[in-house]
Image (cartoon, rainbow over all chains, first blue to last red; front, top):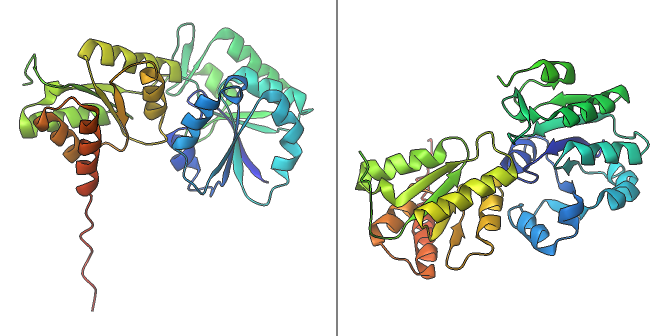
Length: 163
Length: 134
C-alpha cells in the first residue's frame, strides 16, 4: 500500500509526522489536504521549510486530492495523507467513493467546545458525529499519536474522558 | 529562584512537552538569567492555540526572538505564523543550551544577534567519537 496512513492531525506537518511516523515507516511523501493551505503559497513554503529534502510534500485541496488519489495509491514508495480536521477527512472519504478504509486520529487538541477523550484527542459533538459517520460507512477509525502507542478504537475513544 | 525583572533582551522558548521550561531552569541554574526567557509548551494545544500562546508570550515578555525545538515542529510553524506581521522578532529553530546562554549573556537585541546565538549553538555540537575497539 503506497499510502501507509490517512491521518487527521490539527498540527498538520510537525514532529510526530516527520520523525515519529516518517522514520519508522520510511515515508517518502506527504500529501497535505487542506483547502486553505492549498490556496496559500506562504503557508506551503512554511510547511515545506521544515521537511527533510528527501521527503516530497504536495499540497492539495479536497477536490484536487480526490482526482489524484489513485496515483498516490499506486506509487511504489510509501507516504501519508494528512488532513487538519475530521470534516476534511470525511469529505475525502465520501468523494473517493469510500476508497479509504482506515483513518488514524493523530491529534485533535484542546479548543473551546471540545471535550477531552484521550490525552491528544478532544472532540466537539459535531466532530463525534462525523467520526460515527465514517465508522458507519465501514472506515476503521483508530486513535494513535505515535507508532509506539497502542491504537485505540473509536468506541473506546468516544467513551474516554481524556486520560 | 529567578529574578522578577530584567533589563536586557528577552526571548520566548517554545517546544514540546516540558523542554522549554527545562531550558529556562537550566539557564537559571547556570547563569541566573532564567528570567530572560518565557517558556511555552505545545502540550495538548491545537495549532491555533499554540500560535496564540506564542503571540501572547512575545507581547507580554517583549521578546525579540522565539527559539523553537524542531525545525518542522508545530512550535516552529506556530512561531513563524505568530511573528509574520511583527517587526524585529526572529525565529531560531533547533534550540540548545549553549545557544540560549549566548543570547542571555550577550545582551544584544539586533537581528544579527539571533544568527550569532544560533551559530554558537551549532558550534557547540561536537562528536567525541568512541575510540576504536582493537
